[in-house]
Image (cartoon, rainbow, N blue to C red; front, side, top):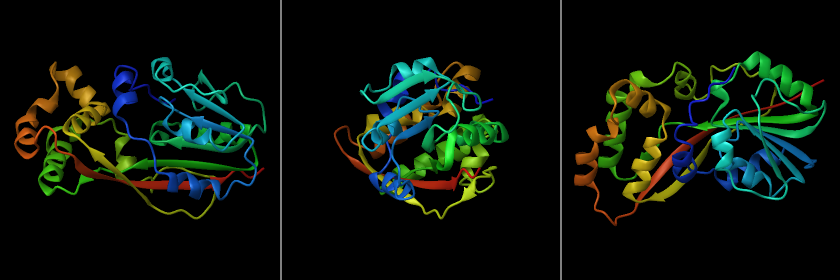
Length: 248
């Protein structure tokens, strides 16, 4: 069963978690000839669902966190509901596409495969993606991010984080494989965007639970010294994708 690690910071997640590049959706949609219905599984607060709504008649978006869904953008053709990835209320053969954005590593993969095969149409595309550790074009900021990730919070990640570090190469993904490629999400951030994004990490929340204070305090002076208040810096998120089809 998937874990709910993000309800506590659902408002921060909605404000600071980045969306995904248009190129990613364009690539996935190139394999989906019929765009009637899509299931955005583990939608969080709807970053992917909002983009998918531009292309599909109906978007079904589910998450096990009610608080996350409460922060999701509303649109006429998006229907949100609380549900796990492994057991849903959907009827058989419902979807042309199933997407999982930055969440597949939390799933019970065999149970999800069974459910996705049930609710997906024959030939339904299944797309699961996430991003690796991000970096800045400012080498000083990238070095701070690296130390924070590897030296301060590395041991506070849940075990499933290793699948992200492996770029989903070691996850169980038994759908009929489709060719994939990597993507790059580029953002222009101010200092508060960086700190806000880091605060959404589940490892940061785990650290706070254990120590009663945020680990971001440990890098605050470094960030302040390297970054003036009104300055904007460029960041890159390397995105990786697993892609396959439901075959019945």
